[in-house]
Length: 304
Ligand code: NDP
Image (cartoon, rainbow, N blue to C red):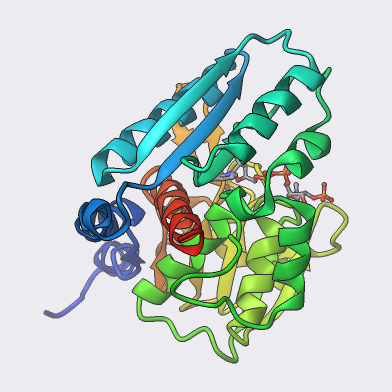
């Protein structure tokens, strides 16, 4: 095909980036997990069991919990959601967690964040038995992540946070060899930025972490062969901030005034330059839930 006009060139370049569908990948992983879980009752006497605690009725949290329930049902993981009122006292929540810790039929415990102001998040997270901490937020599990060099697959003894685990899986599924690559992570949260940085480091990438005090962000993001953006700022990353051929992972979820979801990456201007890019929605999000299922299964197997 002969390209004659500038418009044609732009058109082709827009579609040059491989759009990495987390939705498709997570669907195929879920099918594999369902086949695996179907064997568990005969092998172990029961299916894995995830308990989710939802305090209050924050609409986003309610949606996330519903999605988790559906995903569990799809792969055959037993799930229980404990819905507590917004006014729940910290000691009542801690008592619920203690009961779940002591229940031998529960393999994973997840507290849907954020929690109401009267409850200290870290206190609640610390109360979860380390071996049932499917979010990987317990301080001892965080320490384990930062200590160890590689993620022990396929059954890590302790869980790593779901979104970062899903991101690494997504990058690898695209056939990208992370080893030796310059990786830049925008964001340094406990949930995404920090753990994904460590997982990239574990894969032998050279990692730079950026945050709101970073000077000349564009000059750093332009150096990235792998760029992971988790800032919660719509269209923070534009085409001029990305190197040609970069792998761009957009973690951001920002609700626009039109009610639609937007990432932290300006897809229109970045897609023509990137080699690989994740869409929002349908990129990292579905992988997060998939990792939760995998973490639950890992906890179940580790407890046998
Ligand atoms: P946080 O708000 O906890 O952290 C945001 C990070 O981005 C901070 O480290 C902050 O820097 C940094 N940051 C903010 N603005 C800028 C800027 N202009 N330049 C550089 N760095 C900046 O968010 P989370 O990590 O929890 O989430 C990030 C995004 O990912 C959100 O949109 C969230 O909704 C989404 N998300 C998506 C998930 C999924 O499954 N797809 C799962 C979890 C989150 P500083 O530390 O200096 O404040």
